[in-house]
Amino acid sequence: MSQTIELPRTSGPDGALGGAWRVIVRNDDHNTFDHVALTLARLIPGIDTSRGYQIADRIHQTGLAIVWSGHQELAEHYWGQLQDAGLTMAPLEKG
Image (spheres, rainbow, N blue to C red):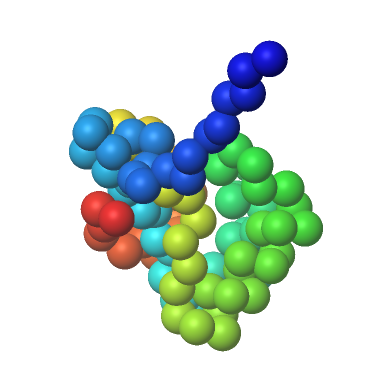
């Protein structure tokens, strides 16, 4: 019987396709915790309301948080949606 051994990944799943892009939300003085948390939960896959509040708190405490990372096209899509919802966005970063 042969056994398959999975080796640790040395690069991201999109390594040859441009790397991961980071969507970063910055702290500001005009968005409420509720607005930030609920917007993240509504627009970013995998973020529920509870996680949205955790991220909103991190943004408030540290000044920013990475809210999503992945392929450039999706990063641009989520970045634009969050900006259109009024959140203060940092420029997209390539990770």
